Image (cartoon, rainbow over the protein chains, first blue to last red):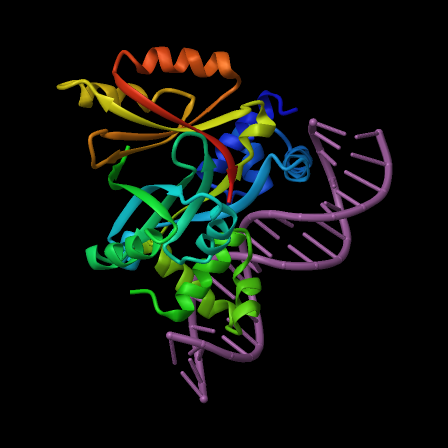
Length: 136
Length: 136
DNA sequence: TTTGAAAATAGACAACT
DNA sequence: AGTTGTCTATTTTCAAA
């Protein structure tokens, strides 16, 4: 499992995943080779799942973001899951416990776009929407 | 604003943010220089907010993940926001619309840990918890 | 885990299409 | 906007301790 140094590396990489092994090493006083071995172990063990970017959806014209809870109609869950992953508006999707069974994070261009999305999702189950006002 | 090529770049970078300009260029048939200019514009305009890693919290010993809605007691919101951001369990936090006002994503090591977290959050407001079963 | 050195690559810039 | 060519700095990789 990950020790203290690994945790430090993860924290730094979370803030900036483009640093080289040398730069990482400078930050935690370790040689580039040692950093390389640790990072590769973190990748191979799957602790680092992927290297990615955070995109500002607002700047791409998706001015509205929301969380959505979906209570899928009985027997439709598998089908709905299959469908939902292909919606471009859906950025994240999770199965959850509770009376609702799917949690979504979505982005849309406008209120009208949100309405259209809701119209589609309503055919799968009951929806509850929380618009995102800001990140904290 | 971002054109089709920029969107392709964003998509590729979202899947793997460590590719070089040259590698990106190979994927979309563009020279490294051209890719460089585009990616830098995406960074400068803030469309690419940050380069980061996705960490598998389960493998780090945080076996439980959950979404949580918080209906903060009147007048306490500012104080609660300040507090919450310092909780190590809180991975994401958003202000939202609706009768609840804060949406959290949290990770905890155990049911007991979750209980302790809930005990703390209960002093700020009413909580609703959805355990995450899986990603879709 | 460190150090050192060789080989490979990336990033930046200029001139041109 | 994009290409090509080139130079420099940096990184990666590997071997030896």
